[in-house]
Length: 577
Image (tube, rainbow, N blue to C red):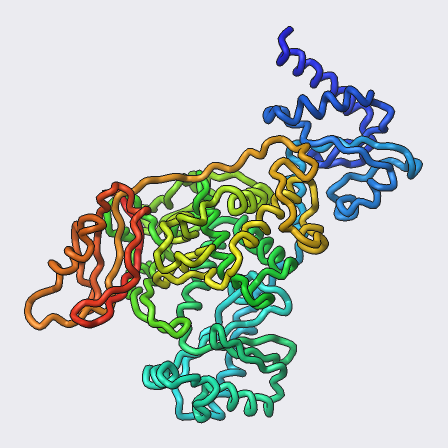
């Protein structure tokens, strides 16, 4: 009998003896088996550890650990029901605990299902708080037109009980331009509704409490009737982002649990930007997480900003799809004018009864809509563990930015050369959602530490509540180096030669010229323009092929001057001709 044959024979005998001596009661298949320490010879256990941890096809062994009965019962995993109950024993008796290979991901999935339920305000509740704020502004500033739009985690269904309901207040163009042009307008322009010093005094009369100003995004927070409200002006792009996240969550039942787990982790670890001065806001982590789900092979979610693999235009057959509406504009963000292209397909539906989909949504020739039913079968526990491994060990932060728009990653813009971490906003041109991260290594070390602890058997609750410093752990085979080599989930790698982008704010031509020749020359160092399409008299959509054969490696400028006017460039999607 060869070595492998002997191993299999030993393994079969091992399983038989283990099952006969298991002390657990009502054990789930993923929970560890437990036997008395004196049932196995110490050398036999050592041999099993050495032999089995290297064989991925053996489903039983993941790790073997020794406990006293007291330690087993006092372990946090026992209290969290990740360990099975055992028969009554002397507290000092020795136990050997045999972890199945599926233990970590299955126990993690179990833990995620036990998290507190995320909060989503009902439409009536949202409308009542919007009306409260609307009435307040109408009372003090009756001559101003303002449009109020709720958005954020309490709208999408990813909120905590004390999360803020975000409300965007859209002002008319003249008032908005005044707000932009006057220096420090939120503090000095005292007769305007956006002036914080004025509104704070007035709102205090309405019993609004804890009124604070967040200068990094020019938002105002307050508390009323036990609910937290945060409002800002002319940030409608944020509402588009909420709608996009909402749509991703309905395309697979794992997405909401996965996103809420990351939010729970971030809040517990104090890593969000509202908790530390140099962090990333939760929205940035949401894009980071969705980008991860879209780059898997097969992906958990499709790319809603590019659903048609055939043809250059990404045309949708459904007449009511939002991708057919005007999606381009310029907005002010962080005191800079940037181009936006808030284009995505909201016609894609989740259909668990339809055939499985691999990379792209499949069209329904009758309704014109497309359905999505991912072929990816990973559990939420497997996804979360691999998420930490991917961003801790596998992602190349030096050359790539994290991108939901381009299925996980895109070439890192020269605008971000000084940023350790880049997370591309899916709509705003070259906007880095991680531009406040000062120490990229620490950011990465949090992911490495989270993976190391989880892969070692630490429970999710312990991870985000009790581990003092995650950044000191970097052990891809577990804290004790006794876990098998981690089998990462595969990524979807594609090389595509062409891309589409739009140019916003083109100057008016004095004759019949459309600036086409000049635009072609501007981009000739990057590749060849195949076609240009007029969207309006100031906007063109451009279809472009890279000379290198890989459009993802091309870094295009976010803006340039044409006839003395600033033109904004926003990338849309990559495609194969």
